[in-house]
Image 1 (tube, helix red, strand yellow):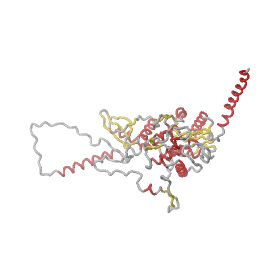
Image 2 (cartoon, helix red, strand yellow):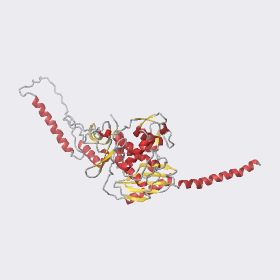
Image 3 (cartoon, helix red, strand yellow):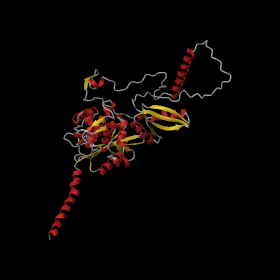
Image 4 (spheres, helix red, strand yellow):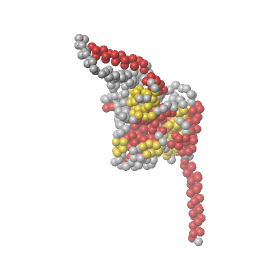
Length: 472
């Protein structure tokens, strides 16, 4: 009798749980406000917007700003990719999603970047902020300074990871523009946002946006975000041919519905974006340096920002090496290769004349013995390689190969054409033609591993054969 009496209670609990799953949970998912924006990344033209200026919870879209500041710090010499970061108790205690770092653990900065960009790890994001500014609070203030410099007028950041906090707000417009800046300001790091998996040092991590990256043609980034207050957020970028579109959604109901909406918005963007449009890169904000900087009025009435006094006492970019006669001929990226060859030949002729002047005219050479056997030596082409740009990379030992060709002329021609068509990643690299037993290799050298990887990805998307060349 007791067992029979318990059955109605059990069925009642099952019914209550069913009601909770069918009604209460969906209601909580749709509570977050919806906002969206679509732009043509090449020009910045707005192709669609809805509630784009509403201040909403960005969730892990925040990490886009965290990573932007980190990239800026690396570029300006504040910190290096191989810098060992000691994990604090505060960073290790962040709730999931997380990498699982332990207090006192040391890990290279590059792995924290991968974990934040690919897995959206909260502990990694906090550790990055502390590594750059000493504390997450100071880093949040730097995020806000950078946001203002980028024109993100309706964004306020309180932390590096994006977990819900009072006053931590942004908009679809601000996040869309931030995604555009990430693509154009730091192209050498942008490939991080398209990696399906990545080595994060302590373990391999998978991308939180891998379903859209694998299903939508041309998608290559950027960042997802979710909290109960924010809903399912996403900033996505896709490229088809010469067109690139960035779409942002705030307040999605689920991962599936959010991805479907973003795909719909990207399709809308490609339909509305013109085939040909002038490229207008966004202006890179001034470097404020660690701890911020100060602004002083310029003579023309404009405001000019300078970095802190400590930051401007040293040159942030290496100086070009002086060119000597023993160095390769250096020409601008669009200069004619033939001019470089002629200059090399003239230099070789001048050296021959100098050697001839050193030998006294009255000295007669000793006659050769009659039984001397002369050996034939093949004279090598003095211009085996034409280096077309001075490298100031300071340790960039990676490169890419774009094929082997039957003649030096063909290899040089392909290098020049490729450099002009892919200037965003190949500008600053060294064009080298290397003679092999069965042809001439066309290589770009003097690149970082990330830049070489990005260049190959972009060239392969254009049906250009490419593979990376490692150090040595």
